[in-house]
Length: 386
Image (cartoon, rainbow, N blue to C red):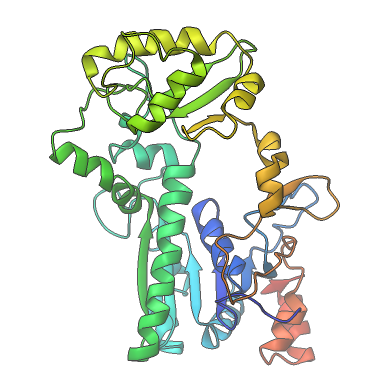
């Protein structure tokens, strides 16, 4: 293994393999320099297995059968020297498998036990199946996204799984690690998509409480209801994004569009009675040139207008290249987002490619004090695999 780097260098994490927000949370920890061992199921590395080359980066893998008592003991041995364990099972599953928080904390009182679920560890929905779209539908977030008179639009799984649940759990784990330095005691972190997405809605709840947000979708400042905070179609069928909330920006938008002499448009742009006229004028103006022509016209103008790029265009944009915001995935010809954020003093780790399940089984067992004969017995019994 290369020398560790990043602000979490020296932190060790045991990840019980899962899907969605759990792996993304662990990716965030690994990106910051944590050393991660992922516990995979034996057989998960079949010929048709395709690892996600981004959210599964930065780990090593051991394949363990958690339904085998010796497999459970292997995981508990890993836990004894770990700082963090992350699991994303339904509530109660870790306990039934014998790797729940009570047992793990008894083995390692300083352990931070991170749990990732959709609904949380308790409440009437806790045992119910769901995915990102279901969780955010119950927070008001999904209801608020979309155009007036149309169905809500799912924002990929960015708001619930990743921006909400995974990021919140990663933050909670680091907070618990800091607290453990003082108290000497670990604890359970109940990370879940429902609570975290609700927290992400804090600004909108504040606007609602202040009487500045309507429950009518597509009628507010940030939800496509406002003509100077919206997407416009250009002559080539591509789009530009306009976020000219402040008056000085909006004045510059009108100037570049050639609309700054129209008396109907130059009054207060925050007067909602004028929004229909503004939208009609902006729609017609943007339709007269291609996206790239408008990008060139707005270049260097302080007005919050940008092209809507696809994923490949985003990675190739000069600013992204200057920031080294993307990095290659091995020799595949594809790129992945680089580690974020960056630090002035701590070196930024270079993520390693995702492991195949069980790729490091023998190596990890040896590092945790399992002798060669013991490893052979574990392999022969099916408790572990490689």
